[in-house]
Image 1 (cartoon, rainbow, N blue to C red):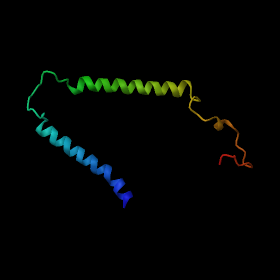
Image 2 (image 1 turned 90 degrees about the vertical axis):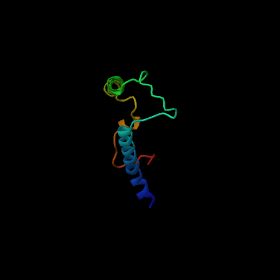
Image 3 (image 1 turned 60 degrees about the horizontal axis):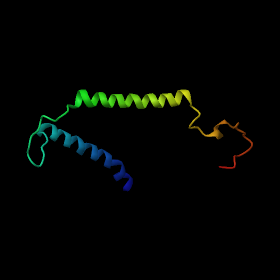
Image 4 (image 1 turned 45 degrees about the vertical axis):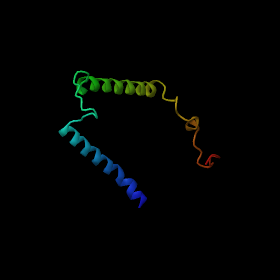
Amino acid sequence: RFFTFHFILPFIIAALTALHLLFLHETGSNNPLGITSHSDKITFHPYYTIKDALGLLLFLFSLMTLTLFSPDLLSDPDNYTLANPLNTPPHI
């Protein structure tokens, strides 16, 4: 029962989030004071889209640099020992 609940819960949360975004898109958001201030808003598409795209490119560039120029930096030294089918390693 817990596994079923654990499996279904993310889909329920995703559906509720989509429903929330749908209602938010149709009615618009407001603040508790009821004051509308359109002067200090930054639009999402040109600013945050480019900002997130540049952050993603920087992250991918750093991972590609790590992978291509020093691939052995994060690997385990036991990966380079030759396999012996007649001997079981002591750490198993």
